[in-house]
Image (cartoon, rainbow, N blue to C red; front, side, top):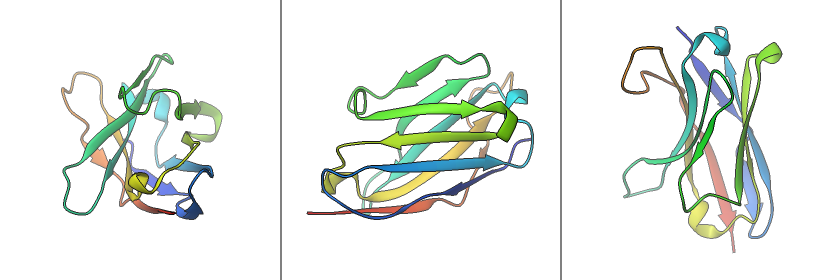
Length: 118
């Protein structure tokens, strides 16, 4: 199993950038996919982006062009580069892993807070 731990959140002004990191306890290459999600207060959890074991990326339409997911297998780390941040991006950001043969993401980190000020 791959247990994710997020870091890199913080306070940033609108228009700024942040790079979130997701360090995994196991080899991320042993997971089918790693994904990033977020949840804002009073809203449901939202899918942002994912990257499979062989590097195929998928993005939510609303994030395409602003957010970029990448992985470094040697460091067992997945990144989410976020640019042109807006106050509506304020949320807790979660990293999750999905095992081969599983339909859903089944290991989740505790999240990292991102706050975008106007």
